Amino acid sequence: MIQDHDRSYYIGASDTIYVIGNWETASFEKWWGTKSGLYSSDFQNDAMKAGTAYEHKILESLGIPGMEMDRQFINGRLRINLDGNTSDCIYEIKTYRNGEKFLLKKAYRAQVQVEMYGSGIRRAFIVSYGLEKEDYGNFYRDIDLSRITMHEQCYDEEFIQETYLPRLEYLSCCLDKGTFPIYDEFVIWQKSR
Image (tube, rainbow, N blue to C red; front, side, top):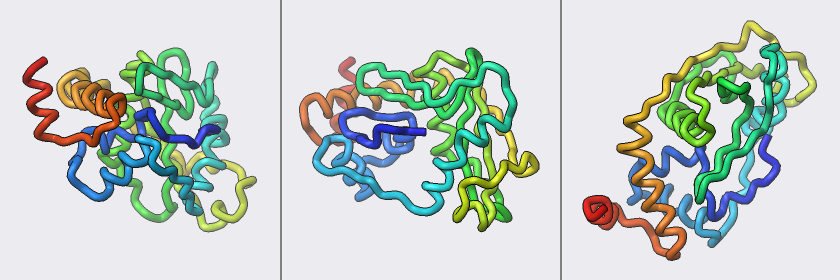
């Protein structure tokens, strides 16, 4: 459960989809403004509140010995907050509306890749939990184990080395200089290295 909601000056694992995505969109521009400290975002909706409220309960319900919660890793501009982990496995919690199909989004998979990279733990599961209508209004309900599914993720060294790290390094330089990232500049920067 994240205690510090200030997202400025650090690039988190949950930001990975912005790092690897299109930098010429309004969404990226807004995200970069938050990272640059130009403005903050404390937006939360009912789904986000419920997901946060149930995160520890879901992890505890797994009954995994040695489970640690809310571990943080910082390396330069990269800041990773794990939901849960043991010494050899990460557990990333994702909630969704029960009755709908859980979508194992590219953003989730990319986030977990960066969590594995930054933590040094090379095994991970995305743990999905379907929230019922009643769960959104009462955060004290018991966890229903039948609504949990586990999605194992294999570490992708090529993605990290070839796609993610060069972009992270360039974006970190832009944060240091206080400049807006430009993809064409990144391509030239990358070739010169």
